[in-house]
Length: 348
Image (cartoon, rainbow, N blue to C red; front, top):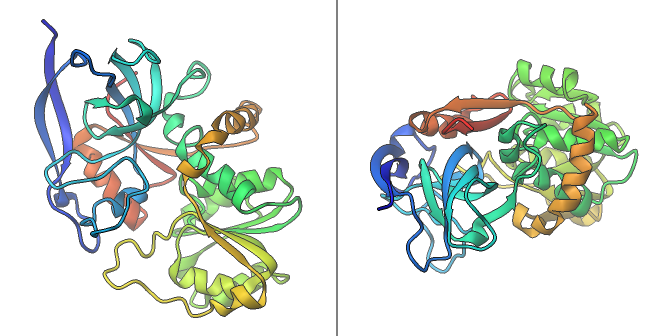
């Protein structure tokens, strides 16, 4: 008989409007059989690290009829939430995975998850010389997102002027460093003095500012970019985007990765300076990780060499235990995290 063990899970209690609260989620206990059902091609995973990401907020909304989710994760009230994670294979009905394999991909917020094998993005081959948790961040979805957004969508050229919002977060800290490796001038905005210090002293940004202390974002951007911005890596939307549009250069690019300032508003903010897209021939394009997952091998080669040479730094904020998951996730929206927010579920 297959072993049956406890399975703690973080469930969504109800769909969310406005800012998410810890009480919108609940940690419950169930059981799981440590064997894939007979004839199933699914994979049973032990979750080691879970990734806290802003996109998860959008999945907490009540689904609109006729809209399509861009991930394999559809949240429903009373069920476990999901996201990216680093996992160990416990049993497999797929010929591609075997017991003991370390993998990363889409999983549920619980101790053990039974997932369709296509939800696994990649086996992990490099865990001996980099922290396993990095596959929730620099070596996972945020890393590919930063790389593809900057070089594929943003068409970054050597020596250009780059502005990054939410610059100390999981994606932003990498965008700035990748741009510096391309000999660009890089400025980032963040939400505290400590985070701005991190940008300049740890990640090598040329300049950084606390957007909460800038009464006039347009004036601030003009002072940092007297000749304008070539590439704006968009993570926040709202007032920041509005000010950036006034400061873009002709033929500028805006890879739109996220708009975290808008996710919790019941009435989204309007953007008033959109005419600049026409006047300045600006290209603004939304994208996500799944559009560029095919670049993963090429990306890994690029980033691992720089990481091993100490040319790229990565900062994580690790919370421990599923019971601390709701607080860690909700903290993203008040800027409580310092670097990439990760949840440790089980020791390696």
